Figure 1 (cartoon, rainbow, N blue to C red):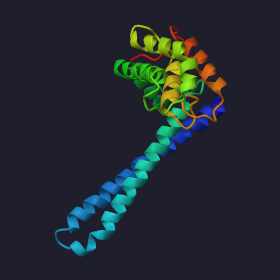
Figure 2 (cartoon, rainbow, N blue to C red; figure 1 turned 120 degrees about the vertical axis):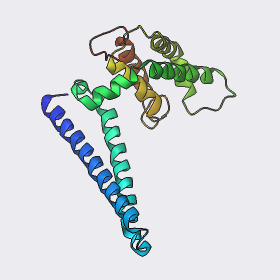
Figure 3 (cartoon, helix red, strand yellow; figure 1 turned 30 degrees about the vertical axis):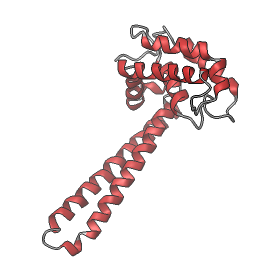
Figure 4 (cartoon, rainbow, N blue to C red; figure 1 turned 60 degrees about the vertical axis):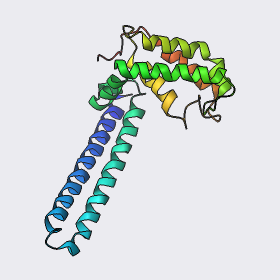
Length: 197
């Protein structure tokens, strides 16, 4: 990610954060007004309650959009210098998150091997890469193993972004899964962009 795109992304994240704070504050003020005038004039509470609800909903939607942007940026080289992106990648490196992610990978492989189990992933792709997925899971479980932030984010992407992930989406090119696993494995044992807990 070049410096210009990095600066633009930082400004966009800051803008989304400001909007979350603004709508959250507006909602809180409107709720306080509704609580203050409610006992005296209940007929006038509908407007501030409505403003509070709309403000809180807008704040939540913007917060989700901001998180979406952070997850997208986390896959970009160089974006981990942004505090919000770094915090996201750091969270993925926490012991409890690594263990949970490892178990998700192992469950995926297990489900693909048992035909009777209901599944959402693409069985043929999981089976074709079962060894790689298992190796990544084992690396995640060995908490002393350093794993680059890029690799942690890539694993997260494969597991949770079902619409885009080649593990779940049949229209995604199967070679994307091979490429993603190569990128992940390249970051195992590497300290270059590893994040500290």
